[in-house]
Length: 430
Image 1 (tube, rainbow, N blue to C red):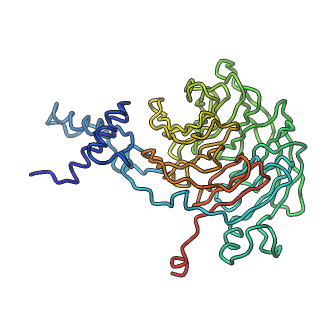
Image 2: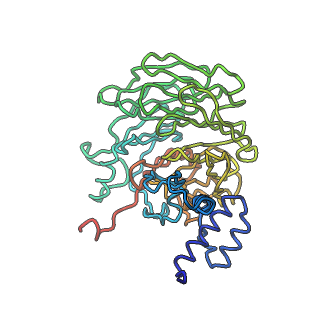
Image 3: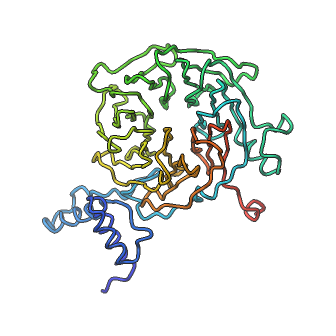
């Protein structure tokens, strides 16, 4: 029986994906162009190799029926997974379709932002030493009612539900506790502070941890008992949140050589990943606190700005001061996809993270010089339309909601903007 066009297309997609996966980018691009797929080539995938491996075992031993199949068809993917969902078309709106629906102003540059795990709250931190906590539902409700973008209006509908003050210098990082109504912040004043925001009248921290260097990054264990801290020092700290006892890896050679720029647990906390000014990305065992893998000179020696796991823990997304974003496969320790095109108007001066949207359809990265948001299809690096972020100074804080099409940006223009993909009127009234 003659194979139909869909079968042939699928076969060619497997071949192109395998060529990309094996590092033969030019051959893959040439074949994509010949087939007319140059605008949206398939992503890197070793699915062809695995299919051939399965077929080969029956060719070599046709009587074998009990051998273990390499492909698990009942595998449930969570987020990006190039092994099983390489041909999926994004179902969420492009980031270029988001709009600013709320604007809050600090008295100094906005340098930190974070969403709560359920996406119901968002917080911003500033060089004016303050932290604002905003109710996302109130922000969206104001948009539905058509009220002003700024903070004016009745207190009952005011999205800013808390303003916290206890730092003596710039708030450089904010994280919500995964289980308690606690927000953890780090500052250039060498302190980590924990605020109980369940109490409306309290503006000061309930706990303070003193460090010896400015705080750069924090990641809280999904269970809520521990947190990782990165500072201007090269040594990673692990704190017990309840007792404030500090632990460090006993093997000095495991540590970075320069400041820690970013640190993040995987969703199951079995691993965590760190990024450093030394240009390396390190993967650590979440139990033993030992380094288990190092991506040396991950961005050709450039300082690393951020490092994040995908939801399933198979890949790591990194960004560097070279304005390139890379997707690394953890099992093979190599770069699968490079998302390029940012930084065309000049090298960046400040670190900024690269992020996925809430379902990992897209990769997002603010371009400092042009003031726009670059985005790509996460599976094949197809670059999407730019979004003008509207700030009059560099974007210094950036975080996407974990649950919806929304993100927040903070800038040296003292403003934090909440971006949201509005629902079309005909859908809203349906």
